[in-house]
Structures are given as structure tokens and as C-alpha cells.
Image (cartoon, rainbow, N blue to C red; front, side, top):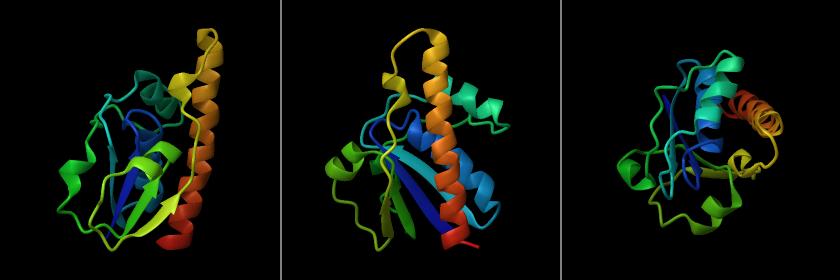
Length: 138
């Protein structure tokens, strides 16, 4: 069983969405975790847009990378430039991957415009996650 860590700045949106999709696409072939270099709590709008696509992340927690120092990760995926550049030293032999996604929590406008940005980012992360699993686990 492979261990995958998704790393972001606050572990509230992008990494939570990626964790949900990676778990979904990996089925039982991987343990998937997400963490942040900070913890901001799981964003309710991320939970909402994932529920719209049939994936429940409402029980996810916002975790700090320090909580996972003892897990032997096979893959570490950073989903924002800030996490890639500011991640503390993480002792792992894991293959590292990076894909920067814009932060939907920084979207502006009315609620409809903000939710559309969450959906846009969610959809990009979904494609990335499915491709990642197909390429590295199946």
C-alpha cells in the first residue's frame, strides 16, 4: 500500500480537495493524507463543492505537516507554490510532485462568483488527481 501526502499552505481547500479525490481514485491502493505548513481548518465551501460532486470531506481535519514525520511517504504532492517553497525539511525518500492551483479561498465577488471559483479549482484538482493515480498507482 502506497502512502501519499498532499501538502498546501493551510490545509483548508486545495489539499483537502486533492485528498478527497486521490482517495476516491486510488480506491484501496493508497493511504492518502493532507497537511499544511499551517492549519486553517477545512473550508466549508470546499466541503460544499466536493459534496456537489459526490465526495464527502466533511470529516477531514486540518493537519500540520509535523504530525506526519513518522510516516514513510511514497509520494509528496505540493499543490501551491508557497508550500513548495516554504515546506520545512521533511525527511522522506518520497517522490516529489508539484502542481500549483490558485487558492479559491482568495476569490472575490458575490457568493455565486466565489463558488464558481471553488468549482473551477475543484475540477482542475479532480483531473490532476485522476491522472496522478492512473500514472503512479494503476
